Length: 304
Ligand SMILES: [Zn+2]
Image (cartoon, rainbow, N blue to C red; front, side, top):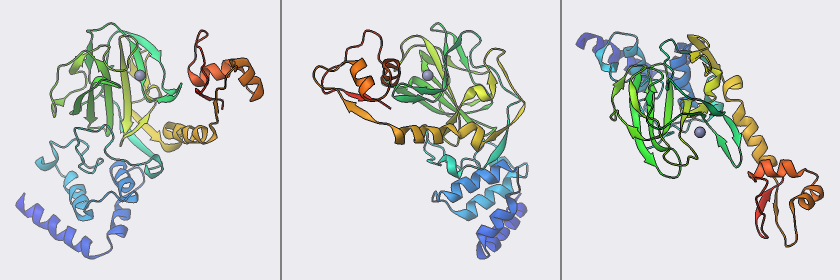
């Protein structure tokens, strides 16, 4: 073991002396998710020592115990943060164009319930997960093998929630739990219990809010999981920037096109709609207004 480290250290020093950039690119063969992801970090200039990355890379190819307790540590550049859901701040534009994810050990996080809200735009905020409505107190299990990265409570948002970093490179979030039955840094297998379903945080009824993320970027879980059959679509799934993360571009575009109107005295929805070339139903949808909602002077309405 010592000898191997010596060779690696020497190699790393040599690489460091030469052109690190070029060396990293040589190793980033197409389809190599780990290196590609590392380049995502590199492109975005997250301050890390390049030599350390290469060192880890080389070590990771060996059956070395050094990496054993760091699932997906290389993809995440060894960032292990128990406070923030997305400490990485790697924008979608820096992700590799495509990368394979091993989904073969998937277990459906809950064994009962049905999808009550899909991933996508929802009123003012984007819904970055899938909601599964089910009674309080049902078992919630880890979808894949990994390690518990966050256990926290967010009264205005996720409520009681758990974030797991998986060996396959994904991270998943389980929110609105009534209780958490795992501990921080627990190594879990797919199907191991994390907690019990609940109705905590910003929630209008008992449900599990479930998210799948790759280096902090959420993507639609329904692209990999068939929530009807409770199975994944493929054991080895290729995520692509265009297919799985393209929604972020649309999101940005829709935000840049947004137009607002300040309600004046005597206004009503149909008058505002006709004056702005839209319909009452569109206004209701954009602003999350029910049929009985009342608009008040001074209120800001999104009209586009
Ligand atoms: Zn949700």
